Image (cartoon, rainbow, N blue to C red; front, top):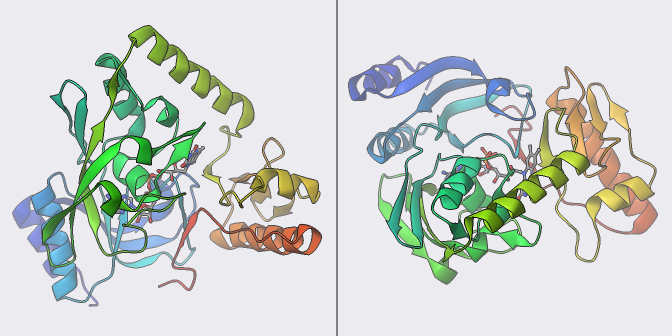
Length: 305
Ligand SMILES: Cc1cc2nc3c(=O)[nH]c(=O)nc-3n(C[C@H](O)[C@H](O)[C@H](O)COP(=O)(O)OP(=O)(O)OC[C@H]3O[C@@H](n4cnc5c(N)ncnc54)[C@H](O)[C@@H]3O)c2cc1C
C-alpha cells in the first residue's frame, strides 16, 4: 500500500488519533529510530481491533508498542502501521485482591494503584519503565519478582479482530518470554492477583528498589535497560565488564561505565551504532569466556522493513 489516505480517513471516522511519517525515536526510551509510515493511538479495544483488521485485510505490517522501553528501532524506520497502546490505560479493582488494567497502563501507575489499595506483589515492578501489556509480553521482572507471580490472564485480539484470552499456564511465562512473544496477538487487558498487605511496608519496598535502581543504573542516559538476557549461571553485565568492554563506544552508543549490562545513547546514537556495540560485545564475550549473549532488547526492522 503506497498511500495511507484511506486508512487516515477511516481513523477520522472512528475518532482514532494518528500521525503520519513520525520519528519513532520520539516513542522509544533509547531515543533512536527512523520514521514509521503511520502511528495510531487507539483509546479503546474496538478501535485497536479495527486497526488490526484493516491492516490484515490490506496486507499492511503492524508493530505494537507500549512505552518503547525495550526496543531498538532501525534507522530506516518501520514500513507499516505502529499501534501505540498508551491511551488504553484504565485500571480498576475487580475485588479485594484482583486488579484489571488495560494494556497501555504504565507499570509505575499500576504499582501505585496497588499501593493505594494496600495490595502487595507488584513491588518488584516499581521502576520498570513500560506498560502493563509490554510487561506481560516480556514477562518483565526484577529483584526476584516477575509478572508470572501476579499475572492471572490476558485478553488479546488477533489480526482478524477476534478476541480471545489466555489464562494461567496458557500464558507460558518463562524468563523474558510469554505465549505472546513473536505471536500475532495483541494484549488488550490483564488481570492480576495480589495479596492484602501493609501499605507502609509495601511503600518501603518500592522506595528501596527505586533507590537501588538509581544507584546502579545509568538512568541519566537514554537506553532500553539491560541489553542482553541473563545467560544461565552468569550476569551479562559482569561478563562484559570482565572482558574490558566498559566504555566501549561506537558513534554515539556506549557500554555504560556505570553498569556494563546497559548500552546507552550518549547523544546522537544511531541504531547501527547500537548494533555495532551489541555485536562487538557478543563476539568478544564469546571469544573470551565461551558464553553466548542473546539480546533482550527487541530489534525492529534491521533491514529497514
Ligand atoms: C532504564 C530501564 C530499566 C529497565 N529495567 C527493566 C527491569 O528491571 N526488568 C525488565 O524486565 N525490563 C526492564 N526494562 C525493559 C522494559 O522496561 C521492559 O521490557 C518493559 O516491560 C517493556 O514495556 P513497554 O511497554 O515499553 O514495551 P515495548 O518496549 O513498547 O515493547 C516490548 C515488546 O512488547 C511488545 N508489546 C508491547 N505491548 C504489547 C501489547 N499490548 N500486546 C502485544 N505485544 C506488546 C512489543 O511489540 C515488543 O515486542 C528496562 C528498560 C529501561 C529503559
